[in-house]
Length: 396
Figure 1 (cartoon, rainbow, N blue to C red):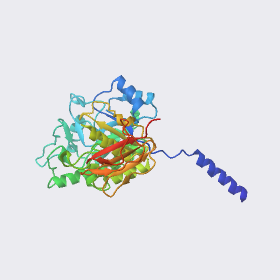
Figure 2: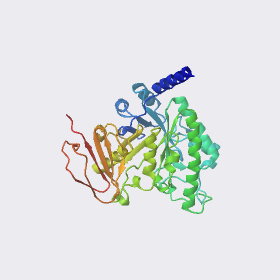
Figure 3: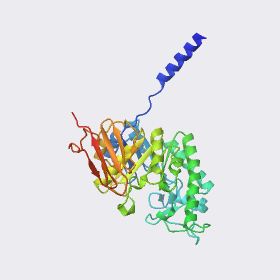
Figure 4: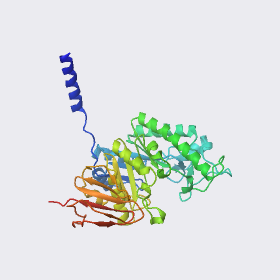
C-alpha cells in the first residue's frame, strides 16, 4: 500500500510539473482590426511584432499566412458578417459572388436559390442598411440561414487556415441601420426582439460548429449593458468584441457607458477566467478618450485582454497608442471600486485609476509613482469625469 501511495504521489507530482503555469494578468495586449484596406508589406511586418490578434478581410489569405510565418503565436481571424449579405463591387463580380466574401453567404447565390433569406419590411421590401449601401438585412432567425452560414464559414476557415472568425453585427437593435419594422412583427420593439432571439440561437449554432472544428468564434456584440448576461452568453466560444468600449454617454458629457448595467462585471469575470479573447475598441478623438479606454482595459487585464484605439471610423490605420508601451507589467491585484465609483488597479510597474462617473472625483495615488512624462505625483489629484490616469514607477 505504501509503495502504491508513493507511486501515485510521484505521478501526481510529475503531472503537476508537466502542467503549464497559469497565464498572467498582464497589461492589455494590442490588436489590429484590419478591415479597412489591404495591408501593405510594412503593415504586415509591424503587425507581426506589435499585435497578439489581427482581424483581416477574407481575401487576405496571403497576409494571414505571412503573419503566421512571421509570428507563429499570433491569432489571425477572418471578418464575417452575421446579419447582412452585400452586393457592392468586390463582394460580387457581375452576377457571380466573389470567391472570398465579407458575409457568410453571397448575395447572388441567396438571390437565386434562397430569396426568402432576405428580410422584408411590413411593405414587403428588402431592407438596405442606412449609411451602408448594398448591405441587405438577412433573416438571422431562420434556422436554414443559420445552418447554411455556419457550414460555409466553417468550411472556408478550415480550408484556408484562419484561427477563427470575427463575426460582426451581433447587434441589439436594427435601429442603428434602419427604421424598418420587420414583416410579421408589430413594432420596432418586436422587430428587435426577433433579431436578438434569432442571434442568440445563431451564435450557438455557429459557435458550436467552429469550436468543434478547433476554431475561435468571436462576435462583435453590441449594447450588452442593456441586457444582463448577454455578453457572457455571446462570448462563451472564443471571446467577444466590444466596439464602443469606453464610450461616453449623454452626447459626450456623461459617464462611461461600459460601466453601466452588468456589462463591466461580465467583462471582469471573463478576463479573470483567462480562457477567451476580450477585443476592446475605443474611439479616440482626444487624449482623454485614449486614457480612459486604455486604463479601463487595464482594469480588465488578463492573459487575453486586448485593446486598440480607433482614430478613424473606417479602420484604415494600423493603430498604435503610446500608452501600450508604458510597461505597466503584471497586475498584482484585482480591480478595486470605491463607493463613489472610482476604479483602480495596481501593477508591478505602475497603477491606473478610472473615473467612469459623470462628475469629478478626488484620489490619492500610491507613493513613488510618476506621470508618463516623468513628473512626480502629488498626494491628492482631481480626476475629471469619464477620465483616467496612468502612473508608472520611475526608471532607475
